Length: 429
Ligand SMILES: [Zn+2]
Image 1 (cartoon, rainbow, N blue to C red):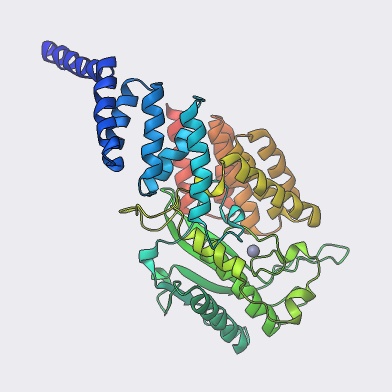
Image 2: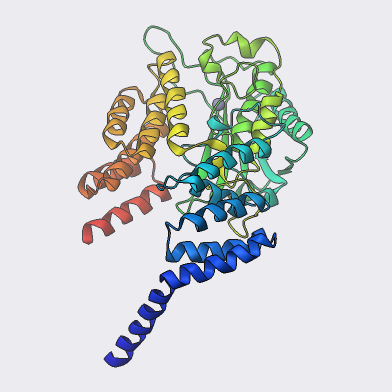
């Protein structure tokens, strides 16, 4: 038995050695060059790659590889490979040329859609959206006598706006809540939305994505409050405008526009709520451009992971490097906090960006601040859950378990349950 094992290992090593040899680099490079000179750019790519596998610093192979990529059809893989060549730690003519090519490629891919806020549409590093094959999306709306009938007509008109304006979003109304991708419900206003000095959080509705542990998008829950903090019904305009805005979130725009003319602008920024009372707002061209681009990007969190399309865009190419995206998110949330220093959500969101940046200490500090302002069950739950995740990542299972148990006590969910069992597994190792 032992002999066979050794022998097999030897053969594998020998094959790897041949593959990695200068001979292999030269052989594949020559083959690639012939195809390249014949104008068979796509076919030359795998041979350049084999040559570079054997000798990753091969100057000529790198240069002609980038040329071949630039002359090929810019499929998802070609975009990704060019981006990686531009981003590689070897600085040579090949990486310089790749850099200029990705600028050119990006320019071509977003032609006609330049006016957008796609930078803010991502959730940290993630592109969250439905798979195009999932349309029409099933929409369930809770039926209750607690809200006036115009709430329903306002929501229906908002749904229609997204359908008419985008020309590709499609909805199907369903009575089956379990099979709905978008679930719209109504809830009573929280008792403690106003502080002692009479300042109230004025929120009409909010949207929560439901994402399973395997990064699949399960649902978007859109919750409307039945009334404002003064227990009055929201106006017709408030319902219609807010529904359009929140539906933008349910379609995958996870952040906000920085321009008040867009439906996805965050009203909390304006501090003037009459903005949503006074007139009807509409989905702008900039909103549409952003949504169209979002649905051309390869998603990282979606509801169907089978058969990725080669005609999707490689997100880092369109969005810029991860740290730039995260920095923009951080700026957006910091602005939110300066407008609303007493709302927990701002600090929770900032903490999530710090986690993506790998800065756990700043994340913990912000969650501690959030704890001081949290008043809803959901906020309290998310804070404890996030604290557990951070300590889990920091490999401090004792503290992680403590917070995961707190989260479970506040709201017993499957996610909390699974996290606890993951932490216990870590402890038993
Ligand atoms: Zn929003």
